[in-house]
Image 1 (cartoon, rainbow, N blue to C red):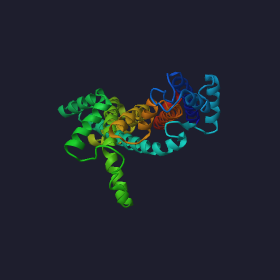
Image 2 (image 1 turned 90 degrees about the horizontal axis):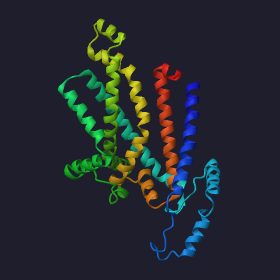
Image 3 (image 1 turned 45 degrees about the vertical axis):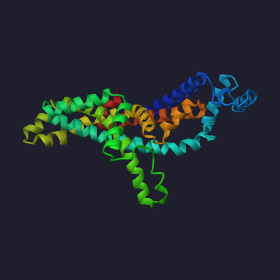
Image 4 (image 1 turned 120 degrees about the vertical axis):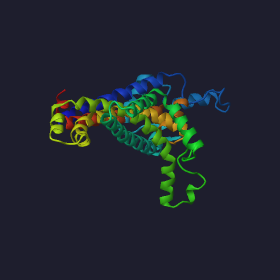
Length: 322
């Protein structure tokens, strides 16, 4: 319990630092959310100045920062200039879609990575084991957008197993019943989630395989073999439970990478989630939405890392004393 409370305090500090850095960096970036007269001839200099005053962008940075802290302390995330509505309302629309994508992708990737790493440990040294390890390394080495493009080209355009983009079929979704609508969302979710899962599985499998091979020489493993247990039973009953903590820790640390990968995947698959909204907000200099998105991603990262550490400490109490 003391370890969990200590990690929760560390997570709160990390979130506060991330929020402050996000505010400072985005406000020191050139430009503002309002286009110049060259971009929009209807937006005169006088109107632009009035909008800057209305949203407080003409105030000193210190005053804006203090107002930012006060509003976040009250649970107010500000106003999205680009969307013309509160930031909380925008996030309430797009966040569940990103959480769904990340949960499915991370869950499938974690299960697949553990399964692949366990299989590789059971067949260590074989030609197929070396081939799968090389394939995982290739997936890790290729940028996420190339993996997304390959998935679209192969499974959407080539084999036509999945829709190419979007959240639903805009033409037919309105006429479907509840089950058909759920299936429509699942079909559109499948390809981006599987693409994200492949990236996660490639990373998890390599770390989990190394953890499995580190446990195999232990005395209790030799004892289990001496009792006449099959190699499969030794691996699954004795080695896997003692090596799984590494995969769980890596899963927590992968959350920032998964969030970044989800942003790229949402852009390429036109998945209308938080990553796509953040990309458009950054391009449009929608300050309030960008800062809120960064803070929220920091919350995910801090909570995920803390949760992974607590789970690892639960599985191995020695972790809590480090």
